[in-house]
Image (cartoon, rainbow, N blue to C red; front, side, top):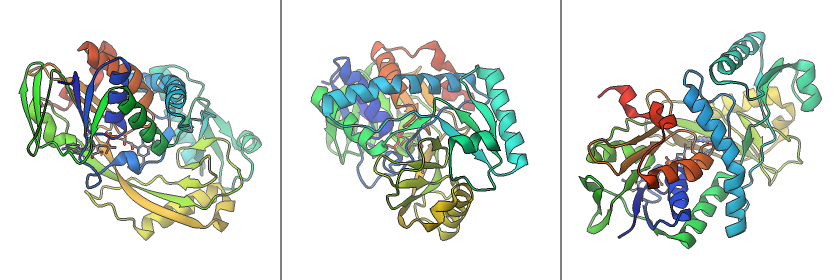
Length: 363
Ligand SMILES: Cc1cc2nc3c(=O)[nH]c(=O)nc-3n(C[C@H](O)[C@H](O)[C@H](O)COP(=O)(O)OP(=O)(O)OC[C@H]3O[C@@H](n4cnc5c(N)ncnc54)[C@H](O)[C@@H]3O)c2cc1C
């Protein structure tokens, strides 16, 4: 019998399974497979801190902690698998294209500073930004800059977590859609068709699939989809050493662009109108992108709680069952692997995670 069952082999479940296996636990990692909605395979790859947690300081602190843990995670994965997750933390910009945007961003920066402390985020005027980022368009009036923002390759991260996890005690079961869980305190039997898996602990980290599974263990994970669309250009000579919340140049040289947020249900089709809007705004920031060839576009679904903040909770009715979901699974991979997984294996979530209980949504 494994020590732990993790349902969902995306970035959240993969990081928790890896973190538990690293501590010596045997883990069964069950994943529905390619027919599921999988945000882990369609996201932007930011390890982003500056705008995380306005109105909820514990989320700001958790995001910062994760960004601090990320280098250890990346280093460990590279040492053990040879896979470079591409982590770079050069600092990130949120560009403003009007005075109104600048004022509005400045007030968020100030508010987050007052609520959650100083992480070095500050507003920069046009001249200061231009000195750091050449080639900016005339519409850019300034930016917020945070020195700890960064990015990574989400696909290499996922591959490294799975590769090292499976070398360290994770039994991965793809094409294994969980359809029922028989629950008793510290005693769970998870069913997938005719297959049965039993363990004293279970984590529900099934992204958009979590909503249906959580009530089976006395938890509430009212997540819904929020569509995002992404454009990828051909490989370009390096022009962007920093990241922005809507633009990043990958290690290979392609430029990823995208910031759409649309309630489109479970639709993962791209729309020309949305892509045009994304492209137009980014060309205003980096005019040279107008000449770049687009090689790929896609849409994927974020996993959103009602207030956009993560949900972490242990079931009161069935201790040993845990919920884990968020809409920033890349950013939070460090914390999930190196802080949340150990807490789950200890059987108790730390008080710093109390703010993330789904009880904040009522029953
Ligand atoms: C367009 C876009 C851009 C994004 N950009 C960023 C970013 O820049 N930085 C960042 O930090 N985050 C970003 N995200 C969010 C990030 O991708 C998600 O937070 C993360 O992927 C969530 O991971 P997850 O493991 O919870 O869900 P998923 O990655 O969706 O994985 C859930 C897994 O559960 C499995 N599953 C579902 N139901 C069942 C079941 N019944 N039984 C077994 N398995 C099941 C599925 O097969 C799937 O593999 C972005 C998301 C999108 C869509």
